[in-house]
Image 1: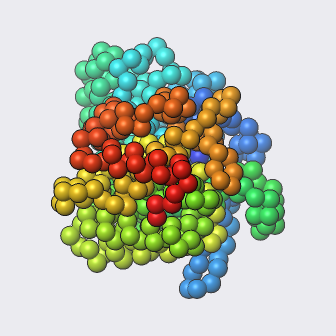
Image 2: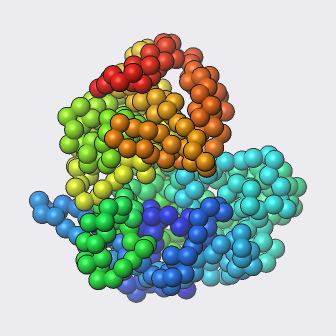
Image 3: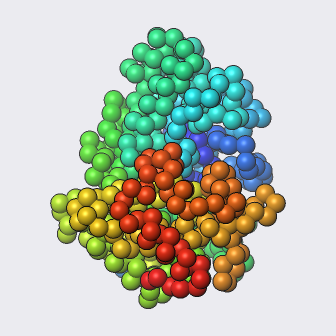
Length: 457
């Protein structure tokens, strides 16, 4: 068996990666996925209750007709809570059949913290946990693995390796281990693309899916038919990762940068720029936004004028991809909740929108109108945060929603601190955003207008 360790039990990985390995098994392969819970939050009770079996439903429009295809995913071998069962976690490190490690810890997950201690586990970063895992494998005398992070940051695997190297140095681990990591492990940059809306919230959809599937499934996840996984070609990865369409399309490439930039800026960047405005204007899903004239125009204008021109020299090809993205946004089945996309919006804006913002300013010397408005809605949304027990809530015109982000950011806005000072924090953005001429003044004015009830779209 080819064993895959997966950091993260969320909807996306289960509807994308696990569906891929399940399909390979149906085609005669022998893959087994072992999920590792990356943080203490949450429970694995649903997996235990269902014996690690679940369904995904791919819903969309093909040739003008609605389609709903059920796939019974049977690729999960075990789901491990390393905080409660470290023995099972490290047993994987010593398993010769382990060949692949996949992770999805959000854009904020691949980071280095010099305060992390090797004796700890619960409070250290994912790269620190990974370093400890790889060190166990090295000490067991085993070969390396293929690491395929899917976090949406540029050069995600390169950044992951940088963090591992820093922990090797921080913890004074043997030079032989560093050499083993450099020569035996292959850190492959990746790009993933499939819109996943996750577990349905409304009772009508739950009932419909239960009838469609033929059973109650608390792990069911909804995604679109489209799926693309571009993986950097290193070592003998073709022995383990098969190209072609296997539920999703897989491409092994030496030019991952093109796929990454196109997807992150066009699809994810559009999402991140849209979500705060959509929430503030009363929309609940991406589909709602695309059926609202003001919000859909906002998406179109941002794409056409401020995102597409800076992806590649082939404007026509990028425009064609953007058109396909807008068609996917119009998928009536996805029920892609804005509040779900809003998770970790601060780091998402930095990774997905700031690069387009900077390119526009560099070329034209002025602020991009629509990206500035999008950022203003983000700051306005966070400025409305009120702490309610352990939750950070925002009262919208039509409902109250809970925002989830790094706690220091939530606490900052709950304390009603300055938007301008938050924009100037280089640790958050990688630079001082107030240094862009007129940006702070424009955002402050926009936030004031939004909070007073004005619509800027």
